[in-house]
Structures are given as structure tokens and as C-alpha cells.
Length: 247
Image 1 (cartoon, rainbow, N blue to C red):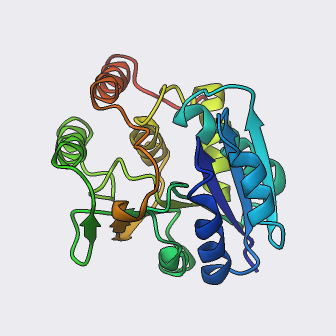
Image 2 (spheres, one colour; image 1 turned 135 degrees about the horizontal axis):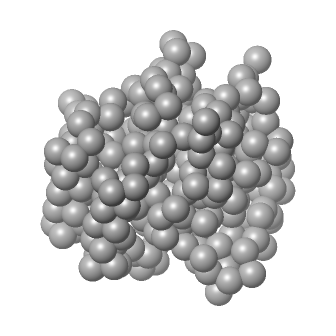
């Protein structure tokens, strides 16, 4: 039977984690939860341990804030250390905007053969609440530019971080790219992973995303202008130095 790992890269999410962990426990009882506390200045790590005391929960802590990409890398390393190839790893935002009730739908697609399952906007049945027009423009523009430069990657929403990965794929990608699997500095990491895993033949499927940004407590971590530059740097690096797997 597949073991499910749920990875929560987290920075100052003490307000959001208790309810999110309760919802995860209800939607995916028995899942192993990995919280990456990315140098939070609040009590994110302690709150996670307390709220998840009855769960199989492990906290990995960065001594300072290193950004989403580094937190994702830490989560992947932790999964690869603990999981078997047949297991699944779900990555989701720790702010409550990604709803755990969708985890069974991700698993259904993976059970049918998908190696990556993206919960995405831009497909029938998706819903987005509480997101600013500027954020919507950023995600839509990122999708169009990615498709123009790299073609269809199996999911229309290339930047959403609510995804399931087969552990065998994560392990294969780590072996293929080594320490170059993640070179992004921030929120562009999800586009980078989708491009690189597509280039090693990943089977990608998608489900509609129910994005509830209106439920999030606290301020947004994303900064629009720096994030745009991160995407442009990522695209330039991939175009001029294509991310080819190691021989």
C-alpha cells in the first residue's frame, strides 16, 4: 500500500497551521506530514508540533529564511530519505488556501498512473476566491509564457504548488539532475520542477483547483516584482543553458 507524505513549506504560518493540520488529518488520516519551518520569526515550528501531536508529523527547521525553493528542496530530501519508490508526496501551501479535501482526488489520478498530479486553475471546475487581480495576472502570464517557450507540459497551471509527486519520480529526478534539480531562488520553483520533470518523461495529469485565498490568515509572502524577475531568470537560464539530466 502506498504511504502518503504531505509536505508543507512554511514561513510564519503559526496562525494557519492548526486548522490546516486538522483538515489534513480528516482528509488523509495516517498520512506522514513534513513541515519545513523556513526560518520563521513566529512560533510556526512549535505550533506545528503541538497541533500535530496526534499525527505522524516531523518538523525540519532552517536557521534563517531561505525562501520557498530551498524549503521545497529540504522537503524533497526529507521525503527521499523516508519514503519508498511506490509512495506519494503531496506538496501544498501552509497558509490554508489549498484545501486538504482535494487530496483524495490527487491520489485517484496517481493510482491511475500519473507521476505528477497538479491541482490547477484554467480548467473546468476550478475556483479561485480571494486572489488579487495582480496575482491572477501574474499566474496567467506565467502560464502563457511557459507554454510559448516550452510547449504544453501536461498541466495548464504551471505555477501552482498544490501537487502530488510519485516518490519514484522525485528520486529519478534527483538522480538525473543532482544538485541542479532546484536552481530557482523563490516562487518560480514550481515551474522549474515541472519543466525539468517533463524533460525526463514524467506523466502529468491535473485536477481542478479550489483555491481559497480568502481563508488565509496573515499577509502574503509573495512579492510581485521580485517574483517576475525570478521567472525571467529561470526562463533565460533554461533557454540558454537547457536543464538536461546527467548522463
